[in-house]
Each structure stands twice: as C-alpha cells, then as structure tokens.
Image (cartoon, rainbow, N blue to C red; front, top):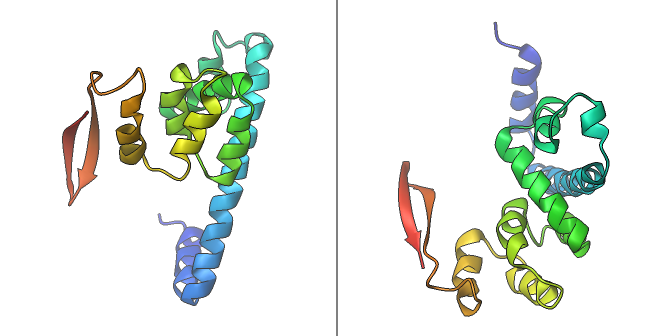
Length: 163
C-alpha cells in the first residue's frame, strides 16, 4: 500500500513556483550541513568517552551503525571526519559553510598536519572530488599514488584511474 502522505507531499512540491522550490532546497541543504557538522562534533566528543561501551556496543562504529541507524558508509565518514575535527576544529566550520564535505575530510584527514591543514583546506574550498584530486599533485601524496574511483556517467558506472 502506498503511503498517501508522501505522495501528497511530492505532489504539493510540483505546485511550487521555481523560485520557491529553489529557496526551500537551498535552505534544506544548509540545515543538513549544520546538522551534519553538529553530528560530527558530537561523534568527536563521544569518541573521547566510553559511552558507546556502556551502551553495549563494542566500538564507536558499531554504536553509529546500530544505535544511530547510520549505514556503514555514513558511520565511517562521520567517525573519520570527527577524528580529523578533533585534531583540526576548523573542519566543523568548513562543513557548516559547505566549503568541504565528509568525503573530502575523510580522504584528506590522514595527510593533514598542523603546518599544512589551513593551506590544504583553503585549496580545496568549493572543489569537487576530481578537482581537488588533481590539485593534490604537488604534495607528498602526489602523482605516484594512483587511485581508482567509480563514477556514474550517462547511465553507466565506470572505473577511472586518477593520477
């Protein structure tokens, strides 16, 4: 049986003028960024305590997956971002502003140092994954490290090497 509440909600969005739809969408995206940043900050604090052990979970990952109902991917991204944010608190502000995303934090986190985190973060501001990967060439993690990633284009998945 189809839930009419969701159908009605989708139908009501079709009636919105373009400007209103875009305004709402931007507002929702901003709220989601703030909520994600707050979640990361809370996970960072939870990681310093043994609350998840007292809750009966064997690890922070298990707690995020089971108690918070996050997918494995969501849990890993948030835990890695939280650990990076504990080392570099500016990460939380960058997440709220939408200047960096969880995947970028997870991938850059292991390579950030006290000396380079502000420079590396500012280079990646507003960049998508392929662009910041190309800009990473000048670092010690440069072109000799070849990685592969999947991309979805024109209805088909493909695996592309990134240099």
